[in-house]
Image (tube, rainbow, N blue to C red):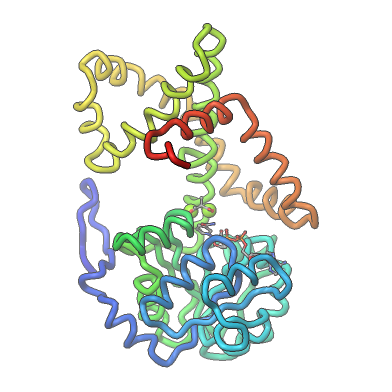
Length: 350
Ligand SMILES: NC(=O)C1=CN([C@@H]2O[C@H](COP(=O)(O)OP(=O)(O)OC[C@H]3O[C@@H](n4cnc5c(N)ncnc54)[C@H](O)[C@@H]3O)[C@@H](O)[C@H]2O)C=CC1
Ligand SMILES: CC(=O)[C@](C)(O)C(=O)O
Ligand SMILES: [Mg+2]
Ligand SMILES: [Mg+2]
């Protein structure tokens, strides 16, 4: 464990330096890691583990598009790719990476294969935290652990291939074998994390649901839509409104924030921009703070979890989600965005 000072608060974290890949391989050398589900996190984690030299198999519904995707990614039916029940049987570590709603419906099957000493691994605190709503109550004699990569499985894989790492949180819900800590940290390193920070299942799910509904996905789209609308209402062209709302942010300014922080991005803009940004950011904070407080409380009460269970458990949830995504894609702002992306010089020939 390394003690790192994060803005004045010391936290224990695990880095790849103190827990190198060789140590992770040693810890997990006798384990069969069964990755159940091959949606977004499944491929990222399974492929990274495989490339890092772990013994990993994939469990996925047969006759599904994602089974075909797993085959295309190099998983071999009968050798490293199995129907879900077979993989559950073979695995000593069950990485439960079905969608959170899918985890509820397949849970009775999973339970049958949780023999004493196995480990049940999640990438979200959802199922175990909201157990009254999900029915996911693991038996006492298995380890229950979590590694939650803080980003899309697509990024987890891409960053791994670039020699980078996506940070993850880790948590232990239940240590039945005395090996839970070593197992979870080794898996966190194995899936290609940057550094690992400690959390609990409940803190992971509360912060994650807040983040994705908030600044990461929900709030960002809301702020984009509001500014775009004001610019358009005042006679600005779609090209101008999109560039001034989204393109400049993703292409120019956020990479500067990522590299060296907000003040540095500000310092690389005009003094005119800096004056205005320093004056206006607090107004935006004050305007949105009540919304964020409401959001956190809805998450903590379990209402957000229930809403997602109810909608994502319906048999036609994919069709309905796709219809809502299409509406977003076909809004003027994002159609303008498609045209702008096409005009990026690097996309010239595509
Ligand atoms: N998408 C992401 O990048 C992230 C996901 N997570 C967590 O990781 C876990 C997996 O999430 P995703 O990869 O997004 O899942 P997903 O929505 O892509 O679904 C994964 C797989 O579940 C299967 N599935 C769904 N319902 C099923 C059912 N009833 N029976 C059998 N198979 C079923 C699908 O065929 C798919 O292959 C979740 O707990 C999620 O919260 C955590 C961090 C980021
Ligand atoms: C990518 C991620 O970590 C999210 C947004 O929390 C999720 O996909 O659930
Ligand atoms: Mg997340
Ligand atoms: Mg999430």
